[in-house]
Length: 421
Image (cartoon, rainbow, N blue to C red; front, side, top):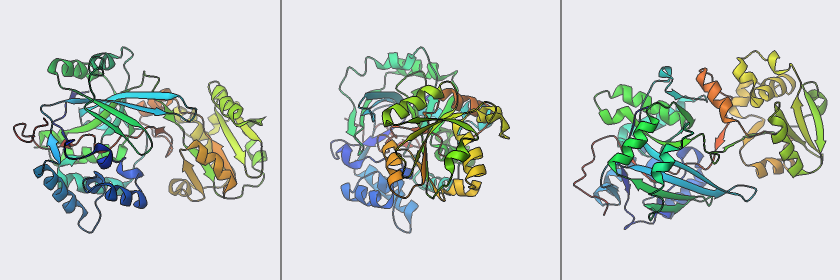
């Protein structure tokens, strides 16, 4: 994969507080949160990625141009790679430090197998992002890419930089620390480019944005900057890259669910939540295992898939090995009578990333909650390599990448003007 540094535009930290102007990706911002971000600062990046009003895309362009003219946004001194450490505590109180870097990669068609998708996309978000890019001529958010390097070559290059004062240090609204270092030495940049040159990339998050960038590149072949997209790259070999599950909340009564489930799964009962969660992960190493909690029932049920069941599903083998494929096809569709359309639209079912919320849902309106095991990277890569896609909302890569750390313009940057001091 061809990687290049960014001709980057960043916020001028002499004029704004970064904590006031960053935001999560556009697709996780609801209307109430958007209002909060607008009130936080007149320069919050949400005003560019989710502009309000009838002339949204033209207004975003005007904001962008105005902020550059008034040096709210400025150019970095020279083409750079942004090395970022995201530090947070997981639900068990353990500190996790996920490392990666932000740069540009050549936009490749999926047929080339250099970039692998793993989820389906919808037309509406892609059209929206295309209009924004076309109006502003910039990427405001990164695609989340995963590569595999057991030599940890990029991390070795970054060692000397993380001993310096960070270029940025910002804490998001979920308490995640984002510590950013600027790699601008040409030799170090070349080492990173070389490391990625023979790598395949998996899109972990940002499928809509990547497909939008593909369309823009094809429609603007004359623009060399448009043939690259801004991405965040993280190493699958690092144990700090954790993929979280997305649990399934059934928002209706489900009579006789245990008898229905027992046709396909061997059931073990646990009485303690921690034991239950640990058992799911341990058993899932050997066979497909899912958790189940029921309304009005204090027990926790560990569901271990019986031999020969997954092979009855009419789908490629790589997808048969996925716990969500089994759950969707055999339990949700066959036994609980959900249609594919209802599953896609989340009608009568809710997909929940937060473990605590999934557990507490049983005390509200849920009849049952399926607790999913942590997805395995090897399964995702195998499915993607075969050109297949996983069920919707299969994976959750946390933390999310912030918008506002860096902007990638789709035109030449004038390094003689508004340089970062």
